[in-house]
Every structure is written in structure tokens, then in C-alpha cells.
Length: 515
Image 1 (cartoon, rainbow, N blue to C red):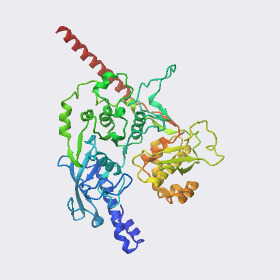
Image 2: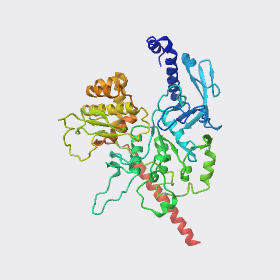
Image 3: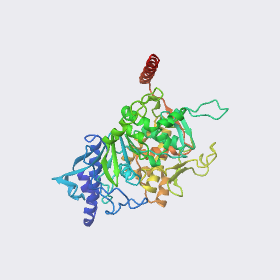
Image 4: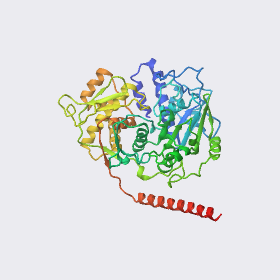
């Protein structure tokens, strides 16, 4: 943040509006500086400030609920409650602070709140007690909020991604083998389904959520946000009785993987659960909501876990149930768009009903003729269930524009993978002044957006990636991974674990016979 740049901007603002402008600037600067502490001094995914108003007026409103009846957020007195200090310099006086939960020392703001540390965090509680509301606050924390939002002092790392089930979503060449394997084939079909290169036009709940997790990892997310209310039940968990009844199961639930994902890849997970107690075996910390009040239930959850079979049940020789080691074969494919598709020079348009955008070609272009496909939604991007696309139509249209730019850039740079293309997009947006510069390179779309919306909002790179991978008809090639010898070492260790387990059971059977 450069104060001389701010002074230049203020010189163009009328005197009576300066204070209002500075309040907005100060609030954004506070959030950015606090967010910078999350991954360093706090070692955390998110911070939820005391005094925040989390519930909204309605499901369709972004405005805070009146208080009362809404209860201001208060962190529990535990190790998860932290006091943060943010130096605001000359902007300190323009922050709208609640003096009952904050203090100011010269130009430094001190504020207490709940820290969601790195690792696996559960948010538990009864129905309608505020679990999903807390998760939505964390999900929205990747963006800066305006004064009066109620959550403007609560922040989340920028690369936290919400993942959920999306029945019917389009998937192409996605590695879901860590979660989905040994899928059955119809009678008479000899070829098995390779879930390391999974493709479908209509994903199920479990395969769509597995794809979403894999793609979040592929795009570099440092944290995943999961709510069981909008997740596939068979993807989330599977208890011991069901394992005993149905032994030939194609799904390895997320429950079994979250610890391995964090231990091996450093990706944290925040999960809202209320109905499956097996989740109590895996978290590093547990937040409990009871009548909208927050408690640290970590110790109680660990006690409950110890009363059951945690740490004793093996899973097909692959490790302890609920805590499987991460297998490198399950790493997401590094992909790139194919160059021989008809989406180049496409036009971006919003579709009726909201939540969907489409890439179309002009009459006579290669997109307007039959492209050897029978998908009537060819070129359609369905973002209706991408829960962190908060900017409505303007941000949805921005995501479509970014997809069009990436497709054009990939044609002239065919060796770049998706993450490198997203890096190039971010660099272009920063260099050219955001969406204004991007629109200049897409003149037809510029006319469309001016006529329909007036402007387009810049989305995060993760929502751009979601839009690109959901576009019906898009195809991806895999970028080969360089073998560093770790796969062979992992296979050797797996064989050692299997041999040790076999020896253990052989000794037990021997003792049983001798007894």
C-alpha cells in the first residue's frame, strides 16, 4: 500500500466524500495486512474477529442481520483464541471499530478472535446452530469486505477453495484415483474405466466432488472448505458396518484422506459435520456451535474418539482407517487445453436464469458448425454451485472473459499447463489494469458487457479455473510428470506395510492355535 498513491487519488475526490473513501480504503488495507499474518505468524487458515455479525438478512442478501436478534461472534477462551495487532499508520482513525472488542495503541489496532489453524478442523453442532454460517464467513474471507458488512475484520487465506458435490458437472481428464477406483463396467465391456484420466459429461455426486477436490489441489489451493450439507454422503465417510457389508467399494471417502493430504501436501481442510461421528477420529481441532455460541470441543472430541476403534482398524493393508497415507499416484494431473478445439476467438455471453455463461462463435465460424458432438450445451459453463463466486453476474461474466483469454493464450503458448496459464492471466490483469485491459483484447465481448452489465468484475484464479474445467466440450492433455524416484520408494514402503500386516495376522493365528 502506497500512501503517495492514495493522496493522488484523494486529490480527485470532493472534500465531503474523502472521509467515506478513506473508511473503505482503511477497511481494505486492514484486511490485507491481517491476511498477510495468517500464513506466517498465526500459521492459520482463517481469523474470525470478535464482534463480527455472521448471519445475513436472508439467503439472497449480502447485508448483515440486525443485532439483536443476531449475536455478535465471540471466540471461546482456549488456545484457538488469539489477539492480533495490525499497524494501520495514518489510516487507523478511519476504521469503524467496536471499542468493546478492540483497542488502539497509537497507530496499531489490537483485535481478538478465533483462529482456524493449519491442519484438519471440524465445525460441529446441531442443526440450525450456525455451523454453515461460520463456514460461509470463512469462505467469504478470501475477499475484502466493505465497512458495515459485519465480517469486515474476518479474513481467510486467498487460496482457500470451497468444494462440494455437483451432480451433472462436466469433467475431462481428471485424476480422481485417490478417491474413485475399480469402477464396474457394463456386461460385455472389457475395457476398465481409468479413473486417473476420468472423463464424464454427467458426473455423479461422489465423482463430481472427487473431481472438485483434485482440481483444487491441482490449482494450488492451500485449504479446502467442505460442508456435509452440500456434499455426497458416500464421498464424505463410510463406517465400519458398511465396510463389513459392502467390501467391494469403489470410493475411498474424503474422511480417510484428509490427514494424508495435510501431512504430505500441507493442504488444510475445514469440514462442517453434524451426523457422522467417524470424523472425530481425524481433526487437529474441533469448533462446536451451540445456540450460535462457539466452544473449543477438541479435548471432548478426542475423548469420544478414544472410546471407539480409532487407531486399531486396518484398511485393506493400506494403513489405519481414517488416516491413510497419501499415495503419489493420486496426485492431480497437470493438464493443458488441447489446441485443436473450436473455442478460439469465442464470444462470451450470459445465459438466462443466472449462474451460467457460454462461449459461442460468430455465424460461419468453426464453433457455429457441427463439431462432432451431440451435447446441446456445448460451450456452456455452469457456475451455479461454485460457492465463492460472490460477485453475481459481473464476476460470472468476468470469469467467462478470463476463460476466453486463457484459451487464446494457450493456442500461442501450447506448452503451458493450467497453473502457468493462470499465472499468465494474473500477470496480464495486473499489467493492463484489470478487466478493463482484458476487455481491450476482446473487442466484441467489450461491446457486449457495456450493453448488458456496464462492467465486469475480476474473479479469483480459482473461479477462472473452475469455469474453464466445467466448460462443456473442452478437452485437456496431460503434462507428463518427471519421475524423481519417490514413486518407487512409496511402492516399496507400501509392500513393507503389507508384509508387516501379513506377519502380524500370521502370528495372531499361530497364537490362537497354540492356545
